[in-house]
Image (cartoon, rainbow, N blue to C red; front, side, top):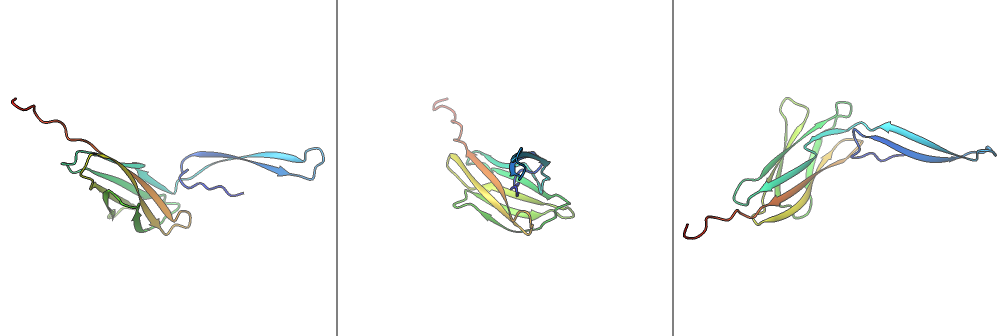
Length: 147
């Protein structure tokens, strides 16, 4: 039995499996398998949010730190089609981690979403997705004419 646990780090997982035996009295037995899924990486915050007005700089940061038990290197990044944000990944000097810097590029009010995929050399998870949500607000109304 193999259980896919990508994205389940830090959670307790329970799965059930039915086993067929050659015992005539109990030909089937249901087994309950429970375990803690160790996180491969700490991502803070888990989702990047870019919210603000088109006339202002709308930015966010995401910190990525590998679990010391499962070290990896980020070798590249890719983004979803037609991203409405700029991204830059920097290795943290003297630390075991990276910072992902994000900046909104959309100049009209509206919402969007996208993903920055961190390509790693990990044998456990080759791609780590960072979800990005943007909400660009309509500028607040100015003072009324003649005021």
